[in-house]
Amino acid sequence: MFRTRAGAAAGAFLLATSLALTACSGSGSDDKNSGSDAKTLTLWHYEGPTSAMGIAWNKAIDIFKQKHPGVTVKFEEKSFEQIQQNAQMILNSDSAPDIMEYNKGNATAGLLSKQGLLTDLSDQATQRGWDKKLSNSLQTTAKYDDNGIMGSGKWFGVPNYGEYVMVYYNQDMFKKYNLQVPATLDDFTKVMDAFKAKGITPLSVGGAEYPAQQIFYELALSKADRSFVDDYQLYKNKVDFHGPQLTYGAQTFSDWVSKGYIAKNSAGIKAEDMGVAWEQGKFPILISGSWWYGRFASEVKNFQWGTFLFPGNSLHPGSSGNIWVVPEKSKAKSLAYDFIDITMSPEIQNLLGNSGGVPVAADASAITDAKNKELIDNFNKISSQDGLAFYPDWPAPGYYDVLVAGVQGLINGSKTPAAFLDEIAKPYNQNLTDIGK
Image (cartoon, rainbow, N blue to C red; front, top):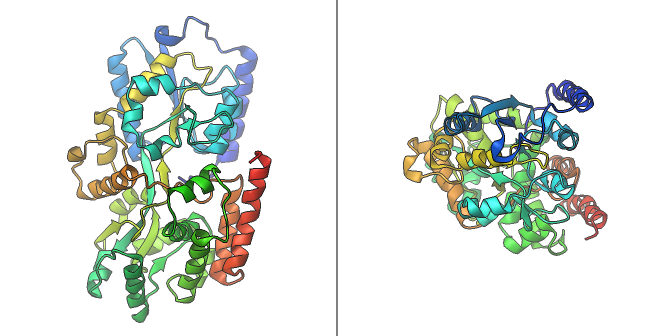
């Protein structure tokens, strides 16, 4: 979900320069290198080769080559920042790839679809059965209307992995104090009270980045239903920022700080330091995303650990992963569709699952690692119940920074819950005005 910006400026400059030179000299291709007659598939993605997605997509390339022996695959690994910062220029040039991994959401894929830069994949989604493999929650980030708002309209992307927020816990510490995995939010509170009684701060929290705001959102979702999520994320109706959902989230988060469940110095802690502290056994509990799962499985050696879904919630922060898009200027659209189809196949989906990722269409019986199976089973449970509620920072441009600052205020006591809600309401409602809602 979140990626490093190291080297982004240099990478963006080099990419922009190469595009400018290419645009001046021409693409070197002609109309005959299109559709099913194309002999080259140019593919861009930004997954590291040892990541679950990188492993899966590399295998998909191998299978594609076997099925298309006369076609050359020109794979170019780009950074997330390169594509994020230059997508509009890229897709407006003759250097557009034939298929590209891209970020989902209104401000990214939605904007490009609105600008006519992405291919409508609706017919392919139906013909190839992608619409049957993806739950309604996952389809939300695949579809965009004429205004570029996700959730309805045409298919402009295909997600084939997922992500969600869960609770990681130190099983050894739970066992030491005779504590059970909580089934309800009240039970969760009792567990945290038990740790506090032993002088242990229960939660490892990163208030300087995304993790703290996701705890606030989990608490708000404990009082929410799908209609609230649709209103907040999809602008279906006006959101009352002092209504029961967000008020409960803000007030309870503030209470957790007062009770010592969340350390006040966590306002300055970054996500990386939060994760490392939990790995070192300094805190028994961490609430964060599935993107930590593979790392914890590899790095945690000194204690047994497990996960559970946020107790009592039917809605959880989460979504599809990033999506495959086919630029409108793609010269090999038919081949691009074939590649997407391979990434949705059981072989690739099962490989993704066994490599520590969250596939969207795997055979559960083919996942051999117990921890990976737990990760996928929980995601499937959420997805099948239409329980993916996206992320709290999605609704408005620049909202991530607004939420970080707001939740930091709750942690350090500089803001009351009511003031926090007023603060995050303002840019949200301004965005509605800007888009004519």
